[in-house]
Length: 479
Image 1: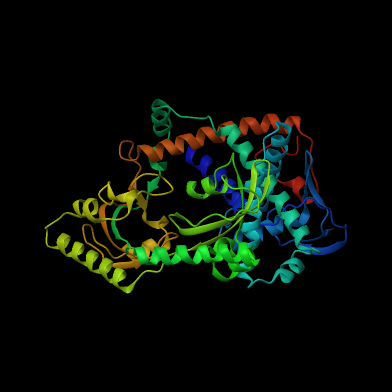
Image 2: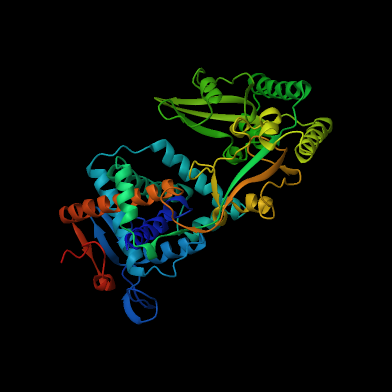
């Protein structure tokens, strides 16, 4: 029963959270005319035909308005993101919208500080992400969202992201300091009936050895000389820095905006080397070429606005020679052969030969980026990684795989499964960390429920239309 309580609430919260992290434009604070049309809608389904307002006000929470269309657009976005809404009713989703607005409203009342830089960056990433999917059709995007200009679209997206950010910050404020003691974890586990204890899926521990082709000094110098040539052409001949970005930069994230980023001294974002160079420059200055893990850069500092620096940059990565690529391939083939014939264990080979610092000193053991432990639940492994290890038996070494990442355009690796834990009923000793997380979630749910009860009572809330018949978990109708 405890697990059911946690899961039913967290499913809705997790589902709704997708709206903030995806390319979502719902919940705009705009009231559209009350044209009457026939739609199929009830509180839980879309079957019963009733005459309702096409886009009237469905609810008001504090200073926020939820329109009739918001929920339908929210559902469409969630489905597009792959969310499973089979067992989630419209009333539950509408309740989550109300909750999100309550968080945002209270965050404003509590003067929660808004990270303007993050929201601006988030908005720009969303626009560029959608344009990448629509082959740059900005006019089509404006038509779809019924906006007259790019600025109007950006303004609306900014407000939506700001409200989502406020809601998330308020959630963190409510639950951020909550912790569970070992005794609370034990009590939580013991209170779960034996026949209701969760089943944890198959988990793997994975290790890898990575060999990265070495960049020659000649390739590095060629890039430095090219960037120095760009700098000279702009400074002495008046060439456009932005045009050179569009033609030459290898930073795909900023290419469409002319290489532009906004940095803030108080909010680290870019890598340290990039920030150090930018914050040492004067307006209008172009830096000398400098190196980061991503390659070589030059920066043009366009504007300083208090703590914010508007910069443009060009990124170029040195070319890899065929000799360097073949050398790396030969090296990892040799490493694999030594492991296969028993000359070295996988862990020994990783410590001696791997170029991946994050795993090298752990004997190649990979860390799950979500749980921060060594266990990967089989059904939740990223598809690309799953494809690489799905046929591996315990202790078997994969064939040499060619891969890439944000830093390295080519790398070679081998993988192995170091341990496998099959599906099993929760065991307090073996699964302590997972049980601790469930106990923490349970405690957070209780804290949120208490906070909501108090805050709803103190906040103006009005629910209209079919949603008055919903059986909300929280007292939104103030009965």
